[in-house]
Length: 190
Image (cartoon, rainbow, N blue to C red; front, side):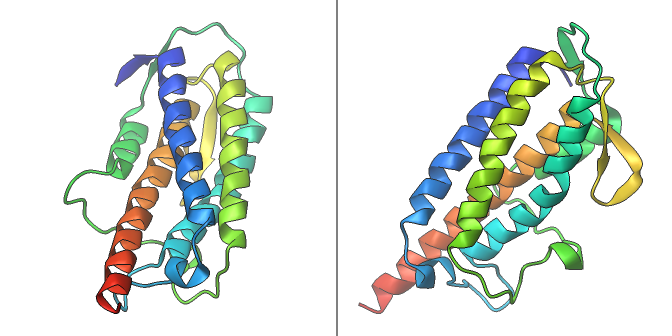
């Protein structure tokens, strides 16, 4: 994938803005709705968000560090790497998307969660918007980041930003689906 760097960052800012709006909407809902699980092995809305918080705890400091030390060149285009593009495309929410296994330390199932998870995620989204702004003066091709599954594998910063934000999108879509199920279940009991 080849795209103008400014266009990519703008797209990612728009997606992150949507995530902020969605979390604001979630913030006003009762915790019992946010903790509703559609099935025994499914995640609640808060578990979806907690999963994203756990990944944000790794990626936000990693990306910030790489931006501070990044290459400040005037680059027009971002060209995705083979592995980075593969990971990013895997995260894009699509109709009929398949469940993916998550690592044990990133699996929030069974956690006792409250509304503060949404507050933490909101802070992380605001940090991501600052990161995207700062990334506009960084070479997204030459600046590399570690990834959560291996310290040895490095992705181009542009790919890492895509992976993180598309991953957020995937689980926001999942959370909204759970919310619809929760509302339908609540309506059935009325």
